[in-house]
Image (tube, rainbow, N blue to C red):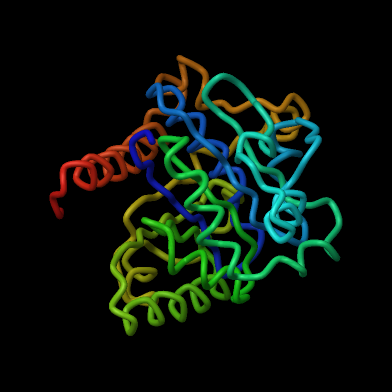
Length: 260
């Protein structure tokens, strides 16, 4: 059995925050640090990781669940799709009717079967407070809340953070993504912090807005795999490096038995 990896769940209280794109960007950044990454698409209704990576999958998360339920599961590698040598992904089912059959008892199983095979497990979700999502948030090492600069998202994020705080859970960070719409910056960073009741740990500003984003999706490109990424987007690179540094430090602390 290899070293235990780190699981990070990306969650947003509203759709359209760029959460799935950030999941692929993080995977690229981690891969550039020579880490092996598995992206799990747990958006069981309309997953988009395969589309963003422009890769077809022979098997998906429902195939894994079906074999798990029928005692046919052998190894996680039988179900993942290769993007490159360091990035693989487990696709969501293309049929939402299959997704609703997956239950929360499956969460611990899939994490246990993948956490020793990869340095990082990056989990994408939808914005529902379903039993599956709640169980994911409760069982991963870290949660990265993704939010935009708009009132509805801020209101919903405050509710999620309150739930975590009441439960005594502190394993979360907040990323404000202002790059999806550079003209939708209604509130100052100070106001947002007051409204959600906690700090904003990372900020992808409107300067990270990419006009050629659609062409990147058509090509299945991950721009954080570009060696010149830090030159083109220095502030965004700093954000991803901060996320990596924090998660890697926690990973090393777990391996050595220290608490940070």
